[in-house]
Length: 253
Image (tube, rainbow, N blue to C red):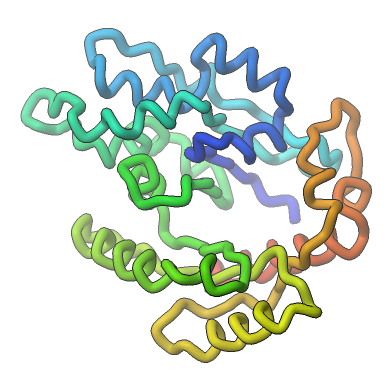
């Protein structure tokens, strides 16, 4: 779509990072501490700050040839250990070093350079996720449409609403995205119907991402350039394209 996109990977699993730059490049950056883990480590040792935004920002990432307007702030497995320690980080002069503002302080000067910023958060609402929500105007909940995967959605929406009110910033639900959907599953179809009929939940987006082996295969970064259809297959690439356009329409609205 020609949009300039920044991906901020806050998930310690580093999936978004590995898909966009590959394991070899990530290992190199992680060794030099050019990941977001360094940003959060600095909060616990403010006299020894090492995070450098320009050095950490990876430009024109992705092995999809047409996607040359994507930049990335990579994640690190080190975030697993960092998150539990952030609550006890020094408050700083005048108690200004709020642990939920760490990411915002680091990237606020860059955000207006992009049409859209996608923050990939870990599957919890801890301090690192709150850092992602702090800079966000909306959020998307991807879920497998089964009972266990969707059980916590009401709690997620309630807590994000409470957080939004606490910081006096609007964070609206963009929608729920059903993923790994199996059309022949009675459970998936029944849960999807329940999600759509529940007026207390965010709207379920029209685009559904079906279960496909191509998703697992696409996770392997290739050094050569390829098309979206070559990466995911024609059907799945079409679904992702539809989803991107649906999300963009929701954001514009």
